[in-house]
Image (cartoon, rainbow, N blue to C red; front, side, top):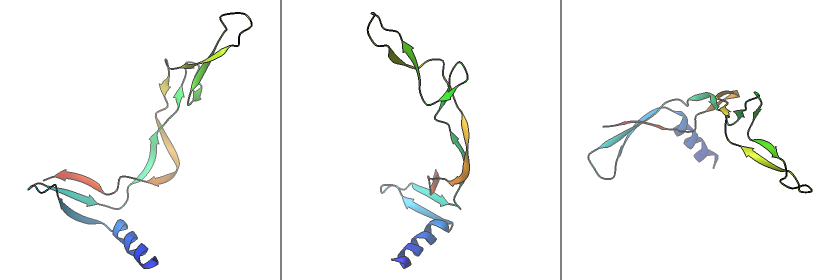
Length: 104
C-alpha cells in the first residue's frame, strides 16, 4: 500500500500537462497542474456591527409586550459590515487542484 500511495503523491506533486476529450466533441480542455498554490488569506465569516464589535451573529433584546412575560432575543440582519480578508496563521494549500486553464 505504501508503494501505491507514493506513486499517487508523485503524480499530484509533479507538474504535468494533459489534454482530455470533452464528451466526444472535437473540443479539448487543457488541464495544467503546477506546483500547489499557497493560500495566505481567506474571506472572513464574521461581521462588524454599528459599535465596531466583531461576531458571527448579533442579537438584540426585545422587551415583552405584556408584564410578566419573558423578553426575547431578535437576530440583527441590518447595518452589518463584512470582516473582509483574514490572514491565515499558517499558509494553506489551494484546494482546487488541478486547475483548468482554458478550452481549445
